[in-house]
Structure formats: structure tokens, C-alpha cells
Image (cartoon, rainbow, N blue to C red):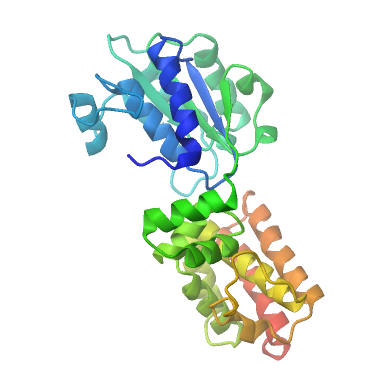
Length: 326
């Protein structure tokens, strides 16, 4: 599997540990979103389960690699919040512990992502496995914020911090990996506020920078039912949509302040959003940006996402066309 250049040193680090027989029982991959932590966790899982691993990773040919590629390896497990849930429940961790306690001659790998989703009960349930690991078991925890993790969990893991690459390195990789021009990659990275995963989505059109901008234009001009739009946004890719909205507002604020952002080509933001925000002053744009971040923060709670998004869209419509909002 392809690993970005800024993760190559991490791969070498874990390969040397595996070669020397010093692989810890629990690894915490810690760093901001968009670096490829999940990809690194898969690379490490393949390395550990492979029959003939090498410095570049798993061989890709052995039975274990074939099972991994097919998604049917019996000793590889991913533990994440259940559909519609924001936390990893204690029953999920108990099931994981049950699987890790099985005896056998091979390795087992359990990936917990994101580790911040562990609640107090599930974190406590995990401690026993961290304190008394079964031989041959590797736990990989993927996390973004150290402060959101219990100290008892952190202290029992080999914490491997990851940092963002330079903008030049990220642009170079995006342009080569997706076969786009460097100016296109730089513009997408600037729109994504440095988030490489979101820049990829923008360049690939998976979520659609233009689609988000069109949705915002239709909402601003009263051409769409905000409840239906909020439900659609909340249904999937909500984080990506809100990240794109935040990035578009940031760029509009830069334009309002007369500042050109990094990667800007001089052709506007390419989304048509400048037409909607042309009459807004910097303070209004900044407030809209804060509303997006407030919505993202509230989504971590128990309130229904579509209600939070609808409130955000109502505020956006009010700022663009106050007459449309009663």
C-alpha cells in the first residue's frame, strides 16, 4: 500500500522494532487529522500479520496478506463507534478483550479508532488488556488529541506522535499521487486549511467543493428546504462538508481583508461563493466562521446533528439575505 513520504520514517521505526522483536503490545498513533493515521495503522497491521515482512511493509503475497486484502483476516479487528453512535461502548471493548484472550500461535491485531471515542467505562474495561496483554496481541489506538485521552491509557501505550508535513511536501505528494498540477494541489490544500485528507477529497471531487458552495448558495437564496438540506448533510460526510464550509469562509474573509491565501492562483476561490459574501464585512464573515466551529463542537454532544446543521444554515441564510428569515 502507498505510504506518504512524511510517514516513511514511522514505517522504518516500526519495522526496526518488529525485526528486533521489540514491538510493544500497544501503540498510540497520535496526531492531527489528515496525516494518514488510519493508513499507517493498516500498514502496521499488515506488517505484524505478514509471514515475510520487509522494510517496505508486508509482502502482499502470503496467505495472511491475501486475507487482509480481502478484508477477511480472522485475527484483524477494528473497533470504532457503532453506526449512529459517537462513543465506543463498553460491550465493544469486552468483545475485543474476549477476542484478544484467545490462545494461538499467531498474532492478533486490534485497532481502536478514534481512541477519543472511548467513554470512562470502555476505557476502564480496556485497561486490563493493556496491563496484562496476551502474547502476540497488538493494540493500535488512533487518536488526534492527547488531552482527550485518559492518562491511564496513555501511560500504557507506546505513544508515537505524528506531525504535519511542510506545505511544499504535501503539495508535491498530492500533485504526484493524484496527477494534478502543483497550483491545483496548492489551492486545494489552502482551501482545506492544511488538511491533506480534505484536500484529496476536494481534488478527487469525492465530497465536492463546488457542491458545498452550491448548497450554500441555494440556502442563502431560499431555493432549498433547509430541513431537508440539513438532513442530507448530516447523513454522511458531515465533517468534510463543515470543513469545506469553514475553509470557504476563511478564504472569503481573507479576500475581504485584502489578503491572498497561500496557494491562491488569483482567479478567486473557484466556487462562486465570493458573489454571496461580497457584501459581507470581515466581522460578519468571522462570525459565520465561528458559527461553523460552534456547530462542529456541539456535534460531539448528544443533540441530533441535523438540528445543529439546520440552525447553522438558518444563521447563514440570515447573514446572506436577512429578508428570507422571519
